[in-house]
Amino acid sequence: MDIISKLFNIYIHNVNTMKIKFTNKQIASILNESSEEHIVKAIKLIGGIHADNIASVDIIKGLLSSKGLGNVKLRLEQNYDLDGIPKLKDRIRFHEYWNRFTGTTDGRGFAFEGLIAGLFGGETTSKLNYEDPDNNKKNPTQDVIISSKKSSKHYSLKIVRDSSERFSLGSYKKKLSDYFKAINSDSKETVMEFLTNENNDKELKIEFLDSCYGDDIIFLFAHIDIPGRAIRYTICPVYGEDGIIDKIINQGGLMAGKSGPNSIGIKPEGFDWSIKFPKVTEEEVSQFLPNEKGVRNKDKVYSLFSDEVTD
Image (cartoon, rainbow, N blue to C red):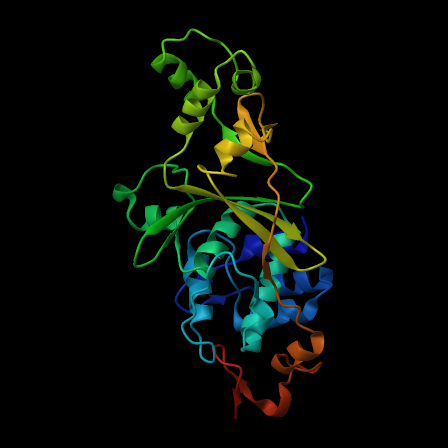
């Protein structure tokens, strides 16, 4: 297991204080294996961002409303560089979060939901279900809901390692079975067979796909750009020109998914928008760390919630 996974597994988070505590034994073990000891040491002192789809939402929102930045709500379909965040401690947090996010695939999808909801002022459906289990759908198609004064938009998020990978939209075996029953068909075709069979009426294919999605679902496809320390994404609605159904039916965009002949895949283009993560130098981080003898510079007390130090 890599260092990022170990950090993830031993976290104990506190949403209110954003502190993440480790035992000295755990820290010693991790630091022996870390190529970025300065980042790990800093996170021990200042706390990090939890990589999930519940606690992380409020933590990230809190960072964007911190002193010096104002109460910021970012907007989708724009480019953002988180290195522009004024507080060094918050840049360290996002630096370490990137390391963890890209260092393991475990829980990456959940972490991505929390990141998008936190950055863009939304909520994850997992968080809503956690807070009010009786008022939400079980396993909803949408992952993130972003509301404004005028409307609420529901997003289904998909992320892959790099731009060469296809995106799996999921398995639609039950949806197709229900559709065949609805039209009194005894067909035994798989989803891919049904959609690729030229003898099947185009309107029936559209009708089936229409039954798979809610009217308000919007897909957000993203891939990781390791050299650029960025997540690049595009947004694709279900309906309309260049929507999911149009790509599958009219543009030859249908691909097999990753879970067999009843899953649907797609490979969108035009990842025009990006979220870039900070790269904090060891020299920058060193101002938060004690020296080799374990003594902080001028024996100052370090604040967990500001970049200042006080006597």
